[in-house]
Length: 529
Image (cartoon, rainbow, N blue to C red; front, top):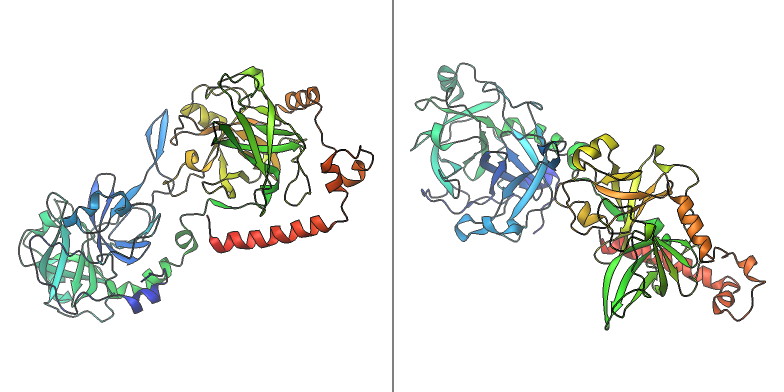
């Protein structure tokens, strides 16, 4: 059964734990609908509202939060641990889910004792509903009343197990006598055993009659009175807030979708190095002429000690990708093994011309102005399934870049994924070596190698605009070919098969266009990203 993010649907399909109070045990291992929640030094309990939403008493919004020293900043993340702790599921990576987005009823600051403590966490990925333990506890609807058949689920002292303790709901009037500053939408509970000041940290669910009735508030040791009741936010009074909060755009859309299919697929190729019958992916390249590709670094077949050859596959968004081999690689300043601090640019000269139809394959022009002045940037490459994608990219200011990478080379572009991303995957995962940095629909840079990549610091991209003169002058030394218009091909000798294909009556282009439309639809349906 799949959950939905809709609050109304959560209530309708929520599964009741038995229908009555569960039997208590000091080593409670059922844990249905409950997860362990952590951030910074805090460890507590949260309740599953849907496959990506957890209810807690408070959680900081970590979407813009970083940690580390001046030389290295890392995105702060919290975690939840789901599954059965008795079976060791907490140790399995698939049951550890990160989160960064949170929204609190009381605002951004941690609420005081006399304020409502209730918050929602948005997970970076979905909880696996295949686990019977990952079920939703239905929310209480009724008005405040004294209920004796209740339990509070908390963490054990070592915070490795879930415990269930019988609890009694205290009447509101009685509670106000003992807690004068009690807010209007609160309820109070007492535990049948144990000291609530030592056992409860805040966020624990109060379950009455199998329904989520309250969320335990946090109290400092100085403010907590072991002989008094414990304050809880009464769930029935916050149903409307929960319903509205999960629909807020900044919450519902998080985490932002970083990668998506791209229309610039026709301008790129993916590279492989073939040796002894084996092919190894070596990066991405941009088609800048019919016989020249631009990438970050190239192996030169003529100079390799061991036999091998490099191939480029283009038309990769179509049903019939094509392949060409390069016979020469020209690296900037002839650097054979560039380091991170080196300028990484290379031209690959192909043995034969690429078939350019401007539908499945097209030449990417060099920028005539600096594309980095303003606008949105994306990195265009391919994902692990060799599907062409574009991924949102953030240009890191030079002064900020130098704090994390002390010696960037001149004209280096510092890039990273957006700071409010989920924090699970980094540019090491999403920016393939040699990919195109596109800003304002122009070629702005070539992404440097991901070898020894550190996702906690920005990534370099070589500035194409700043080095366009080197690119152009180098192209001229190898007789580059950008003569791809059909009309210009009429005067060429008829011994070139590519020219014969270019002179067709247009049926090939029409078929290619239809294939492209069909393939884009297919990609969307497969939801590769």
